[in-house]
Amino acid sequence: QSGTKPPPPPSPLRNSKFFQSNMRILVTGGAGFIGSHLVDRLMENEKNEVIVVDNYFTGSKDNLKKWIGHPRFELIRHDVTETLLVEVDQIYHLACPASPIFYKHNPVKTIKTNVMGTLNMLGLAKRVGARILLTSTSEVYGDPLVHPQPETYWGNVNPIGVRSCYDEGKRVAETLMFDYHRQHGIEIRVARIFNTYGPRMNIDDGRVVSNFIAQALRDEPLTVQAPGTQTRSFCFVSDMVDGLIRLMEGEHTGPINIGNPGEFTMLELAETVKELINPKVKIISVENTPDDPRQRKPDITTAMELLGWEPKVKLREGLPLMEEDFRLRLGVPKN
Ligand code: NAD
Ligand code: UDP
Ligand code: UDP
Image 1 (cartoon, rainbow, N blue to C red):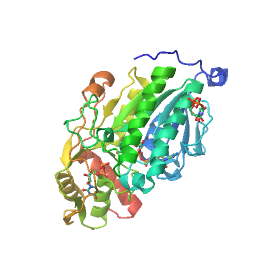
Image 2: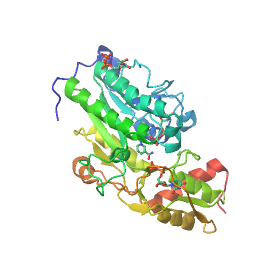
Image 3: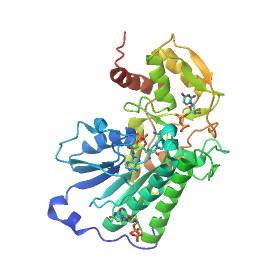
Image 4: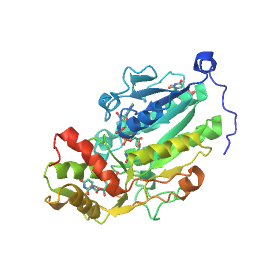
């Protein structure tokens, strides 16, 4: 898994005495849902300095409020499609809208973020000799014809559909990662993230878990998109962050699936949310969007073998933790 050229020498700045014991880590998209939980975990280690860059398209400063002003933390308003000059040892590259309603809102921008954004972060990694991790997605498998999906599966993706800006964008981002690795010897890590949920998800971002919980708390019907038999596998955010850090710190480039293999139909998910959060709520069937994958479940054998990682939080344990956060933000106290 080594590249054709040795990595460039570390930058002089990082070699200076002051930084020697510290690890300086850049998190792009760190004001978002997964990014902010990752920042929390990285900041727990006193040896880490964390720099977040985010354009606040779907993220918010609120997610990072406990770190603003901390001497080991820095927050920069920046769009990754533009050049970025910082000196860091590691880059967690998350910047990209993840929810279909946001990534479809400005598809050209989504492509630019995935392609130019990843290119810029790789250029940065090359200049400073940093290790870089990309948060790719299970969407690279498209509407999969192999189930569950191992990393060796090449996918079934529509190149010209309304989701392509995201799916194909991430596929190009993965290609860029491997080309920089082979051509320039950059140390890369590629995570293929499956559906993740937890506190701090955007309440109205249209993703299924956040929709159902918000609907249940607002006494609105749970909107199951037809047919309702389509499946997803949901990973709690603390497990996800644990997997990402293990991948970054480990020896393997990936791509490695990080997700929870527990598979549910959307109808089952609705029934579970109803039972746990609001037994009186109705479940209704609504129209679906184009190219919705019919089934999705990670094969996590690689993560278990190479990273010693597997998720710990079951859906029935994670949903109440998210409910608590949504109640606070929506101002709906528990009876
Ligand atoms: P999110 O939307 O909460 O976070 C993305 C962050 O990136 C936001 O803070 C947003 O403002 C920022 N951003 C977007 N475009 C940017 C740009 N051009 N420049 C700078 N910042 C920009 O989403 P998330 O759920 O936290 O997802 C994080 C990463 O994980 C994304 O790369 C996403 O593709 C990937 N992922 C997430 C899931 C999931 O289920 N949440 C699944 C697969 C992959
Ligand atoms: N880049 C960046 N920060 C850096 C170094 C590079 O944002 O510290 C960007 C740079 O603007 C370029 C991209 O990364 O567009 C790719 O850089 P690379 O050096 O690989 O390619 P080149 O500049 O030769 O096109
Ligand atoms: N979905 C649903 N009701 C909603 C939102 C989504 O039934 O209110 C379904 C959607 O059709 C898809 C699944 O939930 O089959 C997951 O959708 P989401 O947008 O959360 O994630 P992705 O499609 O990216 O996996």
